[in-house]
Amino acid sequence: MSGYPDQHSGHVSASAKSGAPRRSDARLNRERILQAARELVRESGELKLNAVAKACGIGQGTLYRHFPTREDLLVEVYRQEVDELVAAAAQLVERRESMDALAAWLDRVAAYARVKRDVFAAVEAATWRDLAAHSLGPIGDAVELLLNAGRATGSLRPDVEVRDVIVLISWLSRLDDTELDARGPRLLSILIDGLRAHHP
Image (cartoon, rainbow, N blue to C red; front, side, top):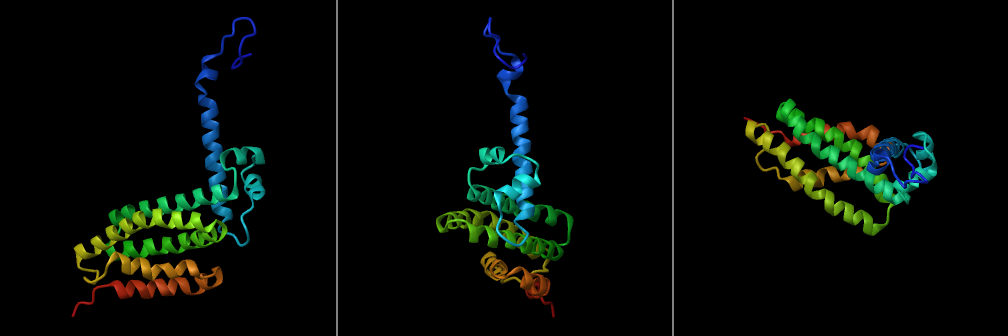
């Protein structure tokens, strides 16, 4: 049989040696698990591994091979959110006017804040402190990129610092979904107006 040792010769096929199909399947399963988890974590209630497995149509054993614990899965969900949030800054700066780019990025921050709140509430304190420490640098770099674009066009008030923006948006992860939905867009609009340069 292809892919298994021959009982007489001990030969193993090249495809079995390479493991390429298996690695490809494993990668796809991992991506499916993360996609399902990222969608479910935005819903109310605790993220359950059996719900994730069901959502992406795999067995729980397959899920556990990729993510042995719920915390392992939540940590990776959070890291992906940070990576996409950071990558979005450069994309928006290239495509939009500077303050529009900042406003669009802050809209993404609101979605990220929901995930951050739920992940940090579910993992051990030492884990969320480590996640926060490692994400602050890349997020700060993304904010700096957006602020530099605003400075270059003169549309951003000159005294704004990266830390100012990070402190101001930190409240988003402290709001529950109802308040974030009701107040989030208006508060972000107020924040953007406060960051604009006011020319006489």
